[in-house]
Length: 399
Image (cartoon, rainbow, N blue to C red):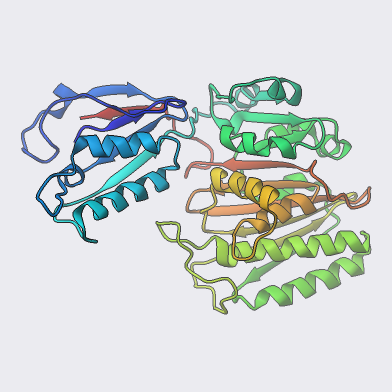
């Protein structure tokens, strides 16, 4: 069936005209002779569907047709892809007067959300960074569209930027660094800017250099969390390098990070959680959750690593924005990520999809605990290849 296209900012969908035989109609079909190249920009969407959608019949034997389909598409032009898919399926069921379909019915909304470039030499890669100042960003009425990978876009905040979070989320800006914060300059400004470069090591090793003490814990059961939290508390108290409120902040964040790895991260292909929060269980032999605590001369770092890799930049930004606006709500996920951001001095998330998630938080031991809205964060999203990211020009070919 001919797909539909909606450009970012448009309020309507347009059918992409094409020709040729359906896929699989003939073994000898030359699909390349009728191919259509289409350049997509970030934010553009494609709607794909099978013929069972428009051929679904009512009780009177009348097909659903293209006009009804296009009306739903245009009425919900700004809806999230999953919401749009659900509305179309619901309309088909209502039209047919039953919960099943006579023919194959499949719908899919594809959105071009990112463009990643080949990572050449690391020095050249750092030079490609786009730094956006807060003053420039606030002065723009239009949404920011990156000409390159969003991985290479860094927003330089000048203070509290919570009012910009919804817009940053829509624009997909996932790296925010306070430009005048002494802690960040002490960590190494260029060092933080280069964090998008993949590394097989724990981020703590480069974010907390000159470690004077460190501990690691490997979970094998959900009940291990309480034990390791008490072990971590006793160890940090014995070191005596932080104020009581900083210690409590670290333990609160540790609790949220481990909860995320145990219950938030394990998800199936439909993004449905495998385990209810609080479920007591053994971790499978292929499941890994590791805690890493490191103390430097003036910095303490905490990271938790799991091998799920299910967290995405969009989910991360949506959770921060939603919790900031609505507060912590019972039964609504995402509050944990929000607390990690608010309770630490720096938050970094590194994800290799379906392979690894590592969340790292840092605290500045040279100043009192600061629970505010100035904390920077960086969400670093890699391909399955650690050092070379495949090129995606945003080009789709339809046959």
